[in-house]
Image 1 (cartoon, rainbow, N blue to C red):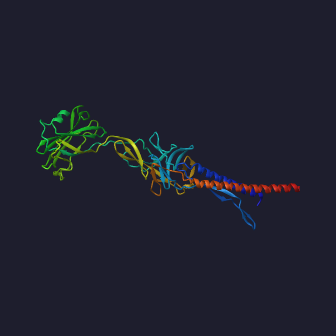
Image 2: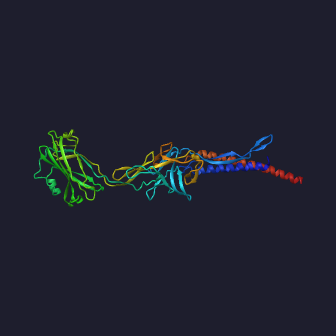
Image 3: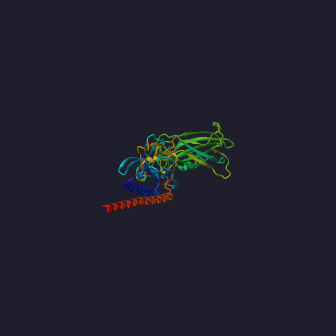
Length: 437
């Protein structure tokens, strides 16, 4: 082996130690980078030369690659609904332009947000990919951008109104016949009243007052009135009847029979809209007669008491908040109390994730050696599950990297001695040649 080869060996060692320190330094610099995966410098000895009868002598070292270590990073809770962390193997999928190149990228960085268009995006503005849901919450089967900020909940017209309570059997029949000319006459010709809000097919609300009148002998009639301004053919300020019926109660106060007719005709909405008033299951229809309205004596002297009131309609709702479950399903909560599936975040997995190309900005791209991306739902097919309101920290072991840095520094110093020794010998040879001449 020549002395110049010895110099080359020393230089390769210096270059290798420098590369090792670069990799370690980059790991240390990104110890706080969300979703960062540390690397290690993998080295191999260079091609040896054969010495006849003396075996082989190596020619130094060479950096084979800087290999990503894809171990799981620890999770930190943030409480931000759009912060997502992957637990297990996989990457979020993002579409857009990064470093001047447009394409599909992959990332472990779950610092997501909703942009001005309502789309779920990365901090770099790339569109997160997944499966969009329609207005009924049914997920599509094709990958797309995720619009989760523009959703609204469609209104639901009231169909059923439920009232439970007691109508006092002590009440006497009001003087005069039932009169719905005005709210005053309706009140004066009835024994008890209660209010309920109902919604039409457009989500408009209508305040309905239900009047109960004792006709004597356990017989009652009821009338549901609303302002005529919201009713087809009605007059604002004048009550319009939207439903009415009769009830009879037994000597023990149980509901024995009931009838009703619905006449709700809201303006510009579905007309007519059937309203079903549920006062309980009468004995005539096989019920107990005491699971809704009853008519017993009230020692307090009250005309009536409604203990429960409910209806199944609601107005149009605006998006109030979103949440994400372990499968990546994004659920929206709306101002009208409704919830609905908005989308599902996709997760990609690779056969050799450590072979992905690091594009910077916490982004990776597919390579020939990484294998094709297998994209699907979180928690399926070996893909990671998702933790919402949390982020995955860097997997850099800072103390270990500091030890590695010291080791690389020592290697650099040792290889510099090889170069110095080769240089000293060459100097001696040059001196001998100079003296011989």
